[in-house]
Image 1 (cartoon, helix red, strand yellow):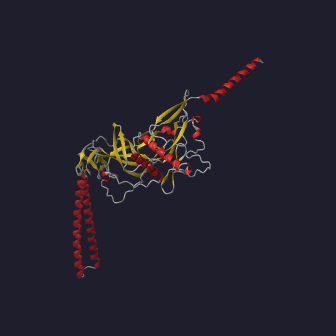
Image 2 (tube, rainbow, N blue to C red):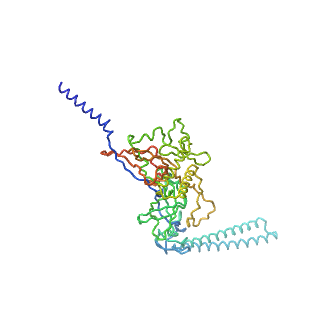
Image 3 (cartoon, rainbow, N blue to C red):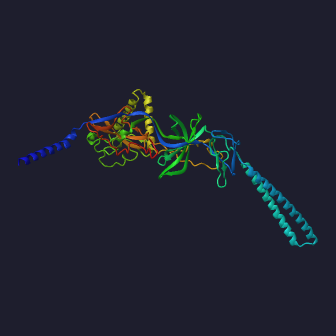
Length: 521
């Protein structure tokens, strides 16, 4: 009996301790915050890809006749000029073929002359009535057949002479021999296809990178965009180029569709060599001198007990408190709210922007909003702006807000970037297809960041997001300014698990889709 009482008492103590730590211990947890500041600067978004460096124009030089390679006049790295002799095929049999064709032509001439004499003779006999008409017709037919045979013999002779000239190989373009695939004494057979003797690159001062772009990123590539790349031979040096062509032919590798993009490169120092692997970065978007935050700040989802709920009661994700339940005019694609959920802008249908307070009216609220904007701009510039400079800055802000409300204009394709010798030997008779231009949206998305208020609680601030480079994202809001601290992460002191999760409102903190299989990094 006594043993049973002791066991029951121990169980009660253990149960009480468990209840305490589960329900009371969690409320006494202490948190540690990680902060960073909002900064102002440039953001450049790029698409990453790999490609191979090659000459702009590269020609494989072959032979149209079979035979033994008797002479080679060019070797690897030889600089050749158009029309120079670079190889010779043994022409012994070709010379004999010419002589044989000449003999056949002489025989055909003799037969034609004999047929002509027979026709003349039969004509006289026919006129005197000594031979019938059929004899004259037979002689005339023999003459016409001999004439055709002589033409055939002449064509055979011409063909034999042409084949003899083919035994001498000439350089088709100016350039450098980058590959030699034949040796003296080697027999080449041109019965089915032309064997390659040399590979000549036109001009190694102008190169191109044939980059492979994933289908998820090809929409952001436009002719004329700037690109940089590195090669393993010079890891510390960056080379630059320009997107000159977007080829339409898809290349599917393991069910992944890719497209070839040509980047024109200047190689005046002759450091780049054909076949090198290039790690390419194509700049597709640029946001100069904008507010930006680390992407971690946009992905934070703090514990509920740290959030200041007094600031969020009755709010939707983007609208203010609306007792009527009608949020159609505030939570649509054009709505934008401040940290307190008040609409900061709305459209009147004419493209003009109106500053609104509660219910879309109220001069006092509008004055407060204007005053807050002026204070924010002055604080961002250290309070050194004059009245004229302040009006100019506010005009820029309103102009940008209006641009965000109106649909982006359809951009026209830029002027064609000349690829120089890319079209060597090609007569351009048809217009060239131009892919649509990628238009950068600087305020395309919405996200939420967290700040620590005076109560020691986390308060959300809703912002518009734009360009991201994978580390930082462009934001626009009047609630914050450069230098303000934002929360990057929350962790429990004494525990190793960081209570940070991806925010369902941000989708990773990127205001616009930026990346794919070979995309933004």
